[in-house]
Amino acid sequence: MKFSDIPTSIKMTVASVAVIMTTLTFLFSTFQTDVEAAEYQEKNTREIVRFRVQDLEKQIRELEYKMEFTAPPPKEKAWMEKNIKKLEEDIEKIEEGKA
Figure 1: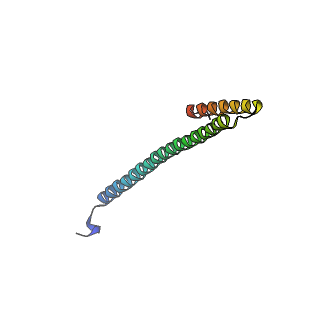
Figure 2 (figure 1 turned 30 degrees about the vertical axis):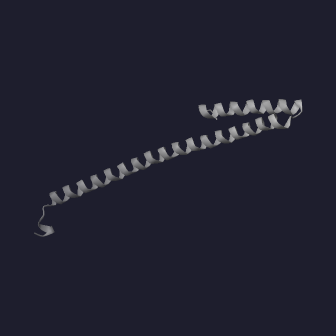
Figure 3 (figure 1 turned 90 degrees about the vertical axis):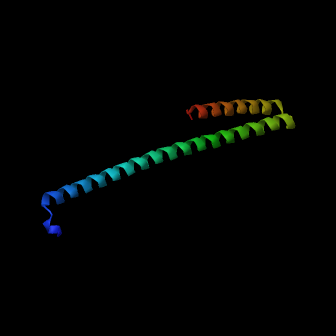
């Protein structure tokens, strides 16, 4: 049986099915890629938030250490306490997603 012996309607049907399957495959792979990209972005955002919080907590610990072991003058101690409070508020904002 030669290709030319196959009726044109069958050739067109097979070609149409092939095009439809190719299109569906493309759309599905694009959708999967978008889903994976969204998951990756969400994971990266969580990691960035975690690193930002860790950095702020480190700054708080450093200030608390300085206050405890260096006996700073009253003005500097007040500034440190104010800064610690601000850093704690920043952590809360980050964890709430506002910053």
